[in-house]
Length: 445
Image (cartoon, rainbow, N blue to C red; front, side, top):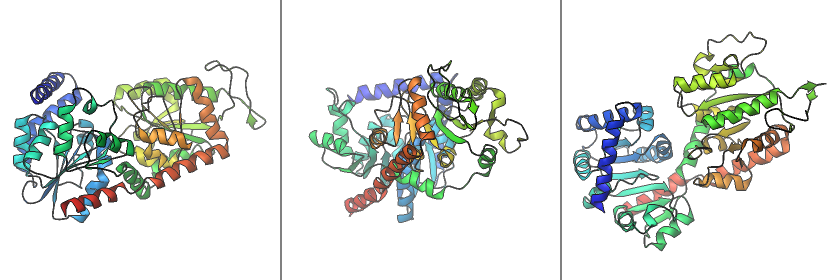
């Protein structure tokens, strides 16, 4: 199985190099691989005590960040190496001040694993959530390096637990010093397959998003935009994709078509887009943070909502708001600020639910904001939890979206109930970082 696995890694690597001829992300990944060993040889890590943290992408980095920063605070004598698999993580966090060296992880062949570890000489290793690189794990095991994985989830359908999964389960069992899972179901599944060195520690993302909320500063530029829409409710769509944007467009158009009469909403019998009109709120604006911020997608969004009705964040500081009808759609055309903007939302719409899966809902939930998302959320424990508690709402087609959002924007009692459910959920799930580090200290002791 090891040879088959390694052959698969080689095929994948060749595929990435071929794709790099026309794909920017593949090109970034290949460039990173080419320079990793040269940069590592000149880096400050590898001499003395070194902690190696590996995250697949940006989301996993944010999940691991509380552990990285708490470990650094408790062990200032360690150097920290941070590796990424994806360009979306490395390109954003390559200058992260919490690590002494940041790089791409070379492809998981036995030769690369040996060379990388011979240069890094890690004292302790942490993998975040689900990146399992079995040649690296095997080499770490042979060198008797304490190796941990945290905030991970296991499900019966994963390859570990299928008929061909024996080799992979063996590596879980022998290569990790301890496995920190998010829930009891994962722990029970592992133990049923003879893997007992695991603990339920929860999800470190709760600690991270809570810290972001506590450290969050006001955004004067965004507040200037909001000041020109006083009295209007704010829908903030995070990490949106085209299906999400099309639904939000239909919702906003629908509300614009609800006339005003005697200072109250006029409910029309028939809406040309969605059929019978459901009572809604006319005065709402949209802050849209698309998952893809390339120029082509930004232009598509402007065409969808109307160019005169859209304003990009990069243009906001110089925009003249002395207009009878200022733009009501603010497009966030940069990365790294979405998590702090949820504070300005009344309702948070989380993108990805009509694709492979929703994006991070906790960044909104930590501010007590009710969340709305599409149907593909089943793999996310926090989404299932927040729906069950009444702070989250999923819909499967557009006709179900207006009544959900209308209720949250129009009914103060319904909104307060959903918001309180979000806040209580956050409070009950904090503390994973401390649980993990305390068990690691016991293991080391």
